[in-house]
Length: 243
Image (cartoon, rainbow, N blue to C red; front, side):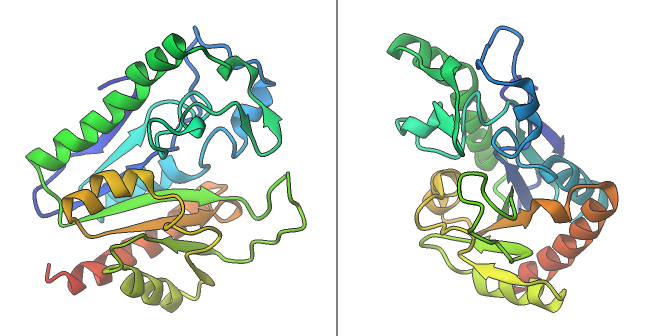
């Protein structure tokens, strides 16, 4: 185990691996982001509901293991390319993050401490126990504070980039659950798909990116319901792979 990540369950060759880049709001005591601590309970710090839904999916046996980011996305955003400015964000949804105005050595130290060990662990896990599919789990807000007029009516989004093998089956399975499904919404996996580009597409492993709307996974009942839906989706999608 590491400060950079935590793992639930046991990866299995031929199984399903869940990856949750933004599942934690943890900020180590020696890092001062220079923000109101209340923001650590908001979406800019964590994908709300992801850790809980991931734990339920592992517990249910719907996925074999989950690798979850160990620190807040404000400490380091693991769903970015390492050289991208947003990997250590200096602002998010209209909020300045003054503690992240780092010089090059400090930025390198931050990446070496959290970003690289997280991705190294995912890579090692995939090498040792290559999954049949990867489920990338995130959540999104019904609206952005910086653009409140932009409504996001979808219950769930399905994201993908070049590898579209699982997208259509996942969209169909979620629609069968009675959900309003966004195909490449509220944003596109062709624009931001860093972790899946690196670990799924580069290894030719089928994957699907799922974005849950946060108000639907804000409590235990909602999290349990969404986990059940995603478990059924995984089962249906796995059948398309001949599992």
